[in-house]
Image 1 (cartoon, rainbow, N blue to C red):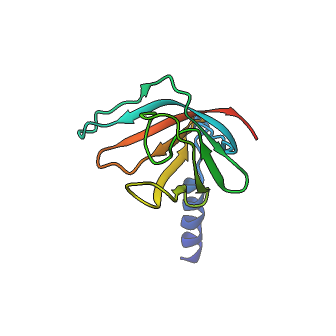
Image 2: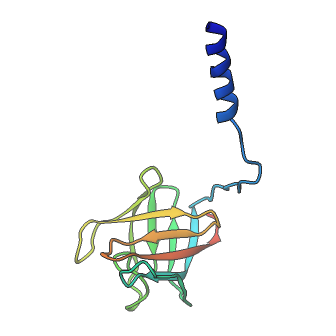
Length: 140
């Protein structure tokens, strides 16, 4: 009986350790450096929203000391107003950007992540889905 139980455990280990060689390999993207806004998503509320390409000079810079700076306000999505440089802090552990001095929400917590394609996605706190997509410009 013990041999049968041992055989079942070993068989289960072999089955659970099976790997898929065709699975895409995710490459870790370094956050440090400059990122430029290239697309935005503003969902109308029914889940049909798609990223829309944009020509923008809005940039984010992630510094090694945990600071993030932007040539536009981090409090607002997109480039709707004149450039208003701002800054905050970020944590790769939590995936959160904290912006201390936003008029409507202080401090503002913005979620971020890097995609498998190497883009940076910033998720603003919206009732409906809204986010910005950035591409890497240069390492620091």
